[in-house]
Image 1: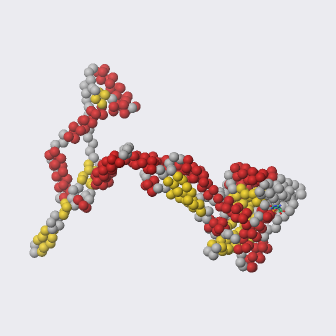
Image 2: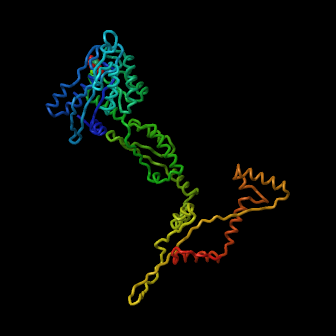
Image 3: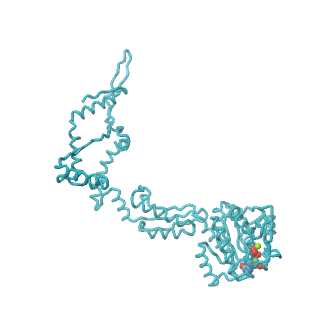
Length: 492
Ligand SMILES: Nc1nc2c(ncn2[C@@H]2O[C@H](COP(=O)(O)OP(=O)(O)O)[C@@H](O)[C@H]2O)c(=O)[nH]1
Ligand SMILES: [Mg+2]
């Protein structure tokens, strides 16, 4: 007998296979637990004493409309540890819940029509039967289960109709959805393979957006149970969604449009689909985008919750990304080589002053430290210090100083009459306040304002005499090499 599904369930539940069976009265919950234990668990129990104890504790299913079970029962009552495939150990326990009431059931009302009060493990005083069912279901699902089985029926056996079961089923599924625990709906039926049953399963899957399995619980065999467990595993959340994209995609900065779209798609997709059963929908959603050449599910591991999706991107996407990074339309190899060579030159400068430049932007001043390769050593010399001798090793390195200064430039054209000047100034102030770009590009005496201002700035910079720059350089050199933090006077 294969236990691979049980191994997956055990791994996924960290060795605690706790299954809460909830639903309407007389839907087959007790029968399900008995069959499950007899078929799937007892054959794995090697200890005779434990075997007998579990068998004694198996719930009795009851006929008719009278409700017997009033509090959840743990089966087995104590934890049983089971080992399969030599190294997989887990504890297994099913919980038989108080059934939710079907109005025509008997046993939940007293003869005078008042609610029958029942004792529960959660309150010292007795509470109405309906409340016990609801609280029991909540407690069992919240604290004692890793998987929920909602038992319902098509009404093909027993004394209740499909519509009676349906009302309870809707209510219980609502309760379970609030708990965010994986669960499946079992439609207990005497005709699990009938066309109408399959149609009902599809309809309910659509209605509740949850896995639905039709089973003849009274006669279910091991493969039926395995199938049910497989469907339950699909209801677990994906623990890790591993998207294997080409390395270059991971390297992209978020401001590259491809990466931007990629991030958005991934976050939308994973936001919409999060269960193991959604793996194929995730694949479809990724396929629909024009970002990828192929999207394949490499593996789905129900035990660990790991989904691996392999994604390939087209050369065209790669080329578009390169164009965007380089800011050039790379039409052929020569353009590419040309651009790369230019970037190489720019990188050399950037490596030298890049970090200093960032600081200059912030504080207005910084020094780009020399690279070790640029430090020049002078020939070592002998040094005499009184009667003692030493050596002197001198080194020199170029150090680039970066200073940000503000250069001002003014433009003061004479226009003509006061009215003419006022008219122009009003127009310009209006642009200045509302559309600065327009002012910047407006023409005065046949030239754009931006060109005139730029020329003014250039003229000022060019007007610094070389001798002054040289003096400035020598002064800084003195401060760095000989200055001890003292005062230095610059006479221009
Ligand atoms: N024919 C048939 N009867 C079933 C099936 N499941 C349960 N029953 C019967 O329905 C009745 C109620 O089942 P039980 O397991 O006690 O329901 P519970 O109240 O949900 O625990 C019992 O008489 C069972 O024998 C099934 O799949 N087929
Ligand atoms: Mg029962």
